[in-house]
Amino acid sequence: MKILVLNGGSSSQKSCLYEIAGVTLPSCPPNPLWESVVDWTHHSGVAEIKITTAQGTVLKGEIPAKTQSEATAYTLNSLWQGKTKAIDQLSDIDVVGHRVVHGGSQYRESVIVTDEVKGAIADFARFAPLHNPINLAGIEAIEQALGNVPQVAVFDTAFHSQLPLAAAVYPGPYGWYEQGIQRYGFHGISHQYCAQRTAQLMGKSLEDLRLIVCHLGNGCSLSAIRNGRSIDTTMGFTPLEGLMMGTRSGSVDPGILIYLLRQEGYTPDQLEQILNQKSGLKGISGLSADMRQIIEAEAAGNPRAQLALNLFIHRLRSSIGAMLMSLDRLDALIFTAGIGENSALIRAAACEALEFLGIRLDRQKNENNPVDLDIAEAESAVRIFTIHTQEDWAIAQDCWRNLNS
Ligand code: ADP
Image (cartoon, rainbow, N blue to C red; front, side, top):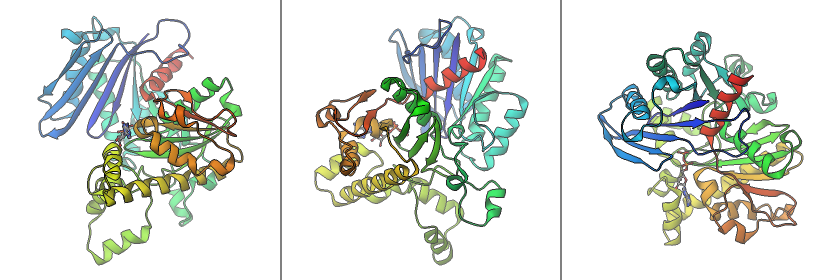
């Protein structure tokens, strides 16, 4: 089965093609046959593209694409034409999976796309205006190019859709909840994948494990997982809540926003821009949203980089504490995404605060670029893992399951 995965964001789109040959899913994530990343943030009217094939062909360049649909058309052509060709014709694709950011509280699993599902994705755009319209446009671009190939929507909110009410409802007026203002949580595809991969590596059933997943990338969120379900998470109604992030503030006192609206005359658009693009590591350091640069500048004695790093660690530790209290036992603490997978310093800083609970990181394993590995000391009370998150492979697996169930 050939599975095309589209993972579209507001400024970039990742796509990849997997082939599953057997009658069961492989136990380890296979390498994709073909991968493409299109990024149209840099210059107006031009998108940067990078396509890689399993044979080692790499195509890098700029394409004249102003819109996501132009970029998607180019990407699809490169699948069956030219030096990055991976299939003979587009009709060789059996199913297309899409990461869809918002599925509300109603989509608890991934689903085959129908007109009703498309309507719901359009409806949830009021909660995710930067993402759901792009996801829907991706589905429609595939309809145009590939006719009625089965498409599967895999929702980033689905894994969190069964949060207990105490975690999901905000303590504002009850009417908020009735109008859909509640905690939805995001990064669910990654949280679920990392939980399943950890269970596999531990040789245990996910149902029997209590886990905390720390997804630390440009966007950062934690989840507390019990019986294979997310029961608490740090992101909320939007992906702005919770931890400090690259350019996002995470949680701040809502009174600050009222103050800025009232005293400083900010507009909602300005507030949105400040909270999403001018805050976090970048806002505090004034340097960069990139954790590598923050760590370098901190080591060189830059006081604002020092503050940014300290804030990030402080908020990470206190939120891990909050997740811990939502579980009444912990079997494994999991680090994933750009920072979680690559920064031994951040993992060590988070784990140091947990030593009094007998949670002990093996310093050497931590420093040794671990991938899908247990990095706890043998006698640690809780296992500690780094997991390479593979959202695209998780989406491909859901496509396979939807077509084979
Ligand atoms: P996204 O959320 O956009 O998918 P990633 O998961 O790729 O982002 O994470 C990007 C973040 O990971 C950036 O802050 C980057 O600095 C950080 N990162 C990548 N490699 C390292 C490293 N070796 N040490 C520290 N941070 C790293």
